[in-house]
Length: 553
Image (cartoon, rainbow, N blue to C red; front, side):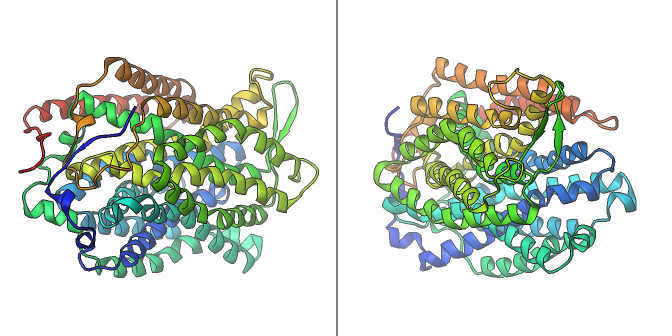
């Protein structure tokens, strides 16, 4: 597809200096970025401590089941992210960008702090995991509204020709949030005995977040509303029904699904594979016995060492988010993101195969080599993630940008990415039960999932994804979202979505079923609710006036 054409408006002609509203550009980026990093920190310390939390909040006796339950709880936060995206996205498009991401910061910080105070399974029984899941859902709702708000807020302040460069700073916040979580965990681990950390020390990173949130809240309260949004609001050009306007026609759904399958899904699996799953895979010390009696080990790297390995690799790779964001200003968003997906699809399994040879389980433990290999994985992350904030904000019109940006991003990262450790664990378990059924060794079977999704994103992206770097940020309407949907394209995209849902229903949710809770049934009811919501949105949209595709008078 060619350039993604947009319809100009009066806000397109706003001088780039006027967009700052008198603020310093680095103040805007710093204030937005620090808050977003802290929210990522809050969200990711749960994943960084997954193995410890498994022993605290779930019944003992079956370590594998406890770990899977913890990963499922970790994934629950991701499942809530698209709903947070819709809820807070609507607020951001109705009330303002600043207000929405102030609220998300408070919710995230409060939920994280309470996790640090939560009694364990040994103390209150089954209430412990139930409350933990509820708090995790709150975290997911908050994060669903945070990222889109911060990305849109920065993008609406910065010069058009350097949007990839400036928005790439917000892209570093997710990795920096994970890095900070690992550093704080390491500091706490090194300051006490392993027994003390297991007993109570794990609570410190959760409790510490309240101080970080307070600092960020103070900084954000000093920010002004985006001048571009303020100008739209002053002239009455904001949307009255952002959700209905964002998703009220098949052409708009075609745009959403194109962004999801052609960018966000692949970006998500590359991100979570190169950072989170790499950490989990390295430090997993369980010995699994296959159906044929073969014993399969994963990394068996000491937890503290694994944290250091990932932290150093993240620190080395983080500047490349900015490098590839800036490169996308020169050659386009699409070439950089598609190259990252293709390389990741081709080389992820070979890299993990090399990694295993340098782990304790592989017999030749070389932490420095592991840092280098993880660094390469994170380099792929920077290619797919560095330009995507600019791409997303350029793909949707200003009046519904917060809502429209947030949904495909958080569906991709919430489901395709957030469920990656769990899906990979389920595939690993299936591979153990069925020796020879997969084209790779069982220890790498879980990696087939991110490999396939990244490959699909490359194909869909090369076919359908538009180049957006020349889109004016103040466009009120985009012609590609107003034109009639292409039946073939829409059929392919809906078919992929249905296939993903069926596979999840048949293979993922049964592995999560518990005697006290039927996850598969819940998943089916949730899918039905979403379908009904889409139909309702279309009905509501019929009552909304169309945005003119002509330039503003």
